[in-house]
Length: 137
Image (cartoon, rainbow, N blue to C red; front, side):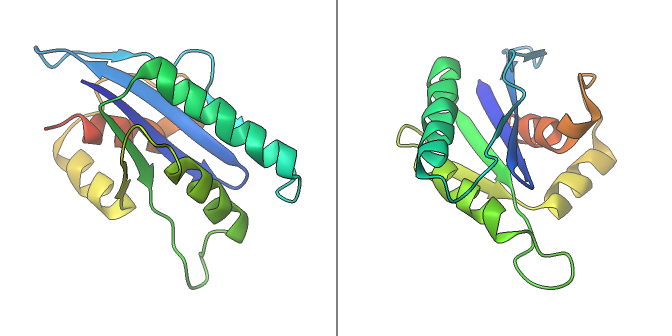
């Protein structure tokens, strides 16, 4: 099974792709594309390029599951409107449904389970946890 976990942070979609074999062994297949970024959300060409590059990345992995860590929509810690624009572009991917997983679900799962791989970079932690979580079935 191949999974892609996505954490949207400000103007970046941080991706971690994992392959899980029948024995439950995890392999990080993220490759060189650690994140996809948009600098100007009002530049139509930049948004289009973001979507094309990200969807091409998905196609190259050919995942069984793709998930996004949900963000707060209201309150003091609400995510920026910009991040929801990126989320919409990700959701337009036509070859696989995009799942939404709460940070609380990840926290509960990892209280009882260990992260099976080490992180390349600390900023990938949520995306890595989500990718592992998606492959738990």
